Image 1 (tube, one colour):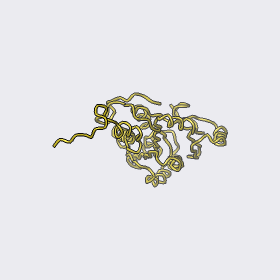
Image 2 (cartoon, one colour):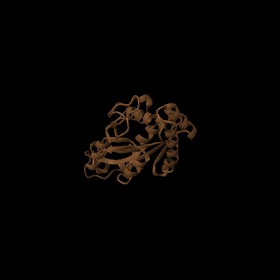
Image 3 (cartoon, rainbow, N blue to C red):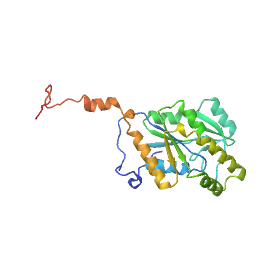
Length: 238
């Protein structure tokens, strides 16, 4: 999934996408406690950062109101999910809140090999599995402003029982201990500011020296010859 980037949403000084030297796509992993607002942020990042593909996971849970098959998740039966596990079709999979979730392997790897960056919205358990395979991925953890605000968000959502909310809040306390496994932390207190911070992370990672095509750099600059004066030493004027 890739769209043009509205310049009004970009960090100051960045106006448009540019053709970058060939490289392998970057894998961005975003995790957050339930109710922290990561889905909203991920949708806005994908809509505003060019050449970014959103990886849609599979799940055995039922869709919530407003969710669509193939957009938020691929909603499948548990027996279908386990058949996919047996065929090794998942990059990772995990059992979370009584349901199974899995990341399809082939489309994600294909996009990265094509030089397209991939955004994967995933829980902590799945992120730690992927980190064993992709040490050079970019790991981002999104936090709510506070536990009280998170509790209010979950209650206001109206999709979970009180028992489920208590269980999710306990899970948050466990997941937060994994923050050291992530390279960036974004506190989602203000949506506009949080989006700006996420955009900055995505753009900065693309400009890192370790992600540059060094062969292209050497050929273009270090090994370039002066066509007008072959074999001559550069002059020195004092």
